[in-house]
Length: 208
View (cartoon, rainbow, N blue to C red):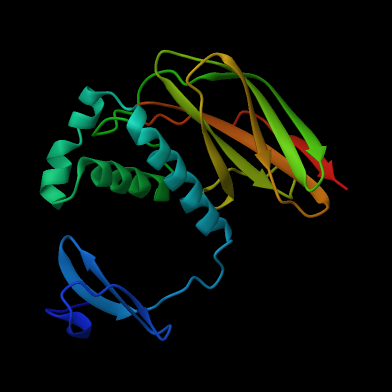
C-alpha cells in the first residue's frame, strides 16, 4: 500500500483502474495499492472469516450503551470508531480460534446457552438445522461447523455460520447450496464475554 497526496489527479479518487490498481482512503489518508483477488473466495478460511464478520456486524446494534462504551479506549488508541474497534478485536480473537466478546477486554467467563436437541433435515440442495436452545444469563450464541468427514474437529476453517440465541426457543438455520453428499455438523455455544464451550456432538444429513 502506498499513501498518495493526490491520486489520479483528485483528492477523492476511489475505485479500481484496469483491474490492476485500487484507489481508496484509510483513516482519512488516500492511498493506492495493487488490486488483489483471493485465489479461492469460497475456501474454508474465507468462509470462516465472513461468517464471524457477518455475526459481529449484525449484533453491534444490539449491544447496550455500557457495552459499547468499553470499546472507546481501544477506538481512541487506533483512531477508529468504537464499532471498528469491536470488529477488529473480535476478528483477531477469531483468528486465534477464540469466541467474540461484547465488552473490551474479553473476560472469557460465564455460562453459555445450552443445546438441548439438534436435528438435521435434508432438502433440495440444502440441509435445515434445528437447534433447541436454552438461554443463560451470559449466553450469546452458537457457532456452526461443517465437514464431509465423520469425527472431524471444529476449527477456524470449517465454521459456516454463527447464530445469536437471545431467547429460549428452537432456532433454524439453512445450509445451502449443497452438492449431493453426506454432511456432518457440530456446534459450540459461547458467552457474551468470549468463553467458548466444547463441541456439542455431531449430527448429519445426506443431500441426494
